[in-house]
Image (cartoon, rainbow, N blue to C red; front, side, top):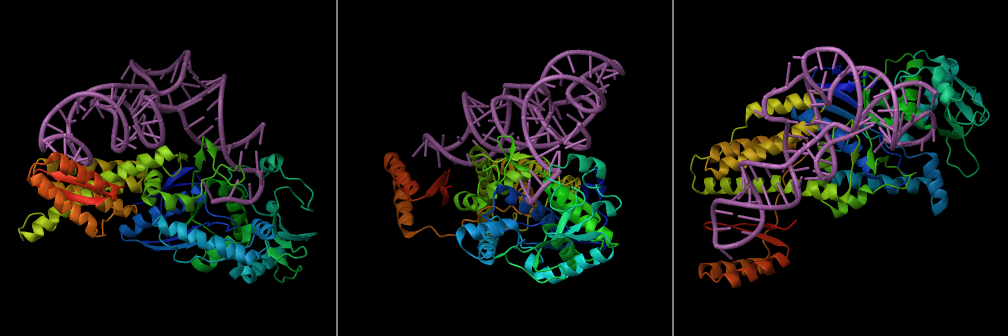
Length: 464
RNA sequence: GGCGGCGUGGCCGAGUGGCUCAGGCGAGGGUCUGCAAAACCCUUCACAGCGGUUCGAUUCCGCUCGCCGCCUCCA
């Protein structure tokens, strides 16, 4: 049974879903004002792995992740580029899906946009005003944090200490520095929606409350996001929901940052790497493997060396896959009984489940995969095809449960490469090694790697 | 100031009160191969510092040093 570290208690707790075998999951998605960076990619991957693992285990996962498509930063971006905020949001939402698709992240079951929920947000804010949890002031409507008992649950701080540490200016007509905007009145030229308090737009913290409750219902199982969202964003979401009598999320989980030289990667620090660039230039699986090898609650560095490291490691996965494919082809063509339906190694799969169930210990799960790869190769080397494919199949099964698949060399060898391979086979048969080596170089120049075995050329695949 | 976290071998990065102290990458040596590649085997290796608890600590406690995050928008 899956247990996860819960932010509210600071302890690991077993996930007890509302409906057995089903997880309702809400993940805070991106504000689409720029291309996504590696930190956003990690976020998408962490919850993709959670979801895939649960689905692999037979659960049904209702996964909601929002798109914040109206926000001060989007408006600012639009202003500086002479476009409408809606054009800006659409462009970067496209970039978001394109990048996460390349990462192999499953699309959420629902991905609501903030602008689709403005009416509902106005309704929620109205109820907060009516129940005196919110107040109108110049500039908009504000939420009164001290009106909610237990404010600070996620921050693990009392309202007093939050108030004294607040770094925000106390102007803005706020009654308390911790209070936050529910509704921002529009300045001239800004996009706006009608409301009882005047035309304006919702504050950021309200959309997730409305959308999660609408799509998942109260008491949904798990609310998740980056550690920076813990406070104030999630605290404020919870405060609104609780103020209106909701239980809100049952469990809370937060993942750590991608860092650069020990510092948080962020737009404001200017030290970010674009996710879009990464998935264009590198094997997207390398980034997934890196996120798997670091625990989700630990910070991780993503350097070019780390990407190269992970890419090389993936080579082990791919090369075993080719080796087993070859074996299966041989077995199939000889219609022999050998290793046709390879059985999983159930002991290994049990260990895998234990690791994953223990707060998603993907580092150990990944280590297990690579250990199995080594053992599978060793078995194959010793001629034990049955054990080799059993272990290898288990490794691939686990990798799949974490969203990692061997690269399939689907594309056929192009004719010019095929011709060179034929020439090389002839040269080798004639023991003309110099000619053979020259041909291998030419083939490599065309982007293909040749691997020979005792009986001749065993494998040709695209170089990486 | 409050709250939270980090400091592991050449590098990345797990984990644990003692047992052969993950895994990947790298380096060196082997096996295999015409040579390579791939694969396997072997070697290399650590727990920031100082105290304390303990039969025994990298793992627990305290302190020191260094670093980071949140308390403002942020995955």
